[in-house]
Image (cartoon, rainbow, N blue to C red):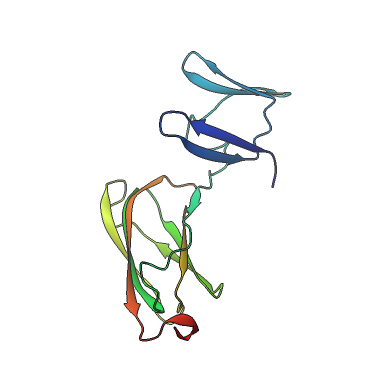
Length: 159
């Protein structure tokens, strides 16, 4: 990993992490954030690319047992989202089995709900984690996520 910068939103107390930030100084010029390094001054958070490169964005959700101690398989995931391109949804079970699905938004650029069918044979476990990211720097925001499990008859560990 390159240089790392952390930002804290004081109103919502939400931290954000940025990779490959090599700025020596950061400041505001009026209401525009700028970064300064040995090569010059750069306006930050303006535009749809990072110096011509696509901006990779993703977030990881913590492991969850989906409110049940029983083993389960995943049937589908519903995402309330707005996206102008495809999303990558990666599911990892508690045995570290991982599968990535590419989801196309049903209404490009508009808020909607998209259904992602999951391969039920890929996953079986009690705990799952999910990672959602963009493809080719596309814009996205997620409003909600609902995971639909298929409950199995056994609890892990023979409870």
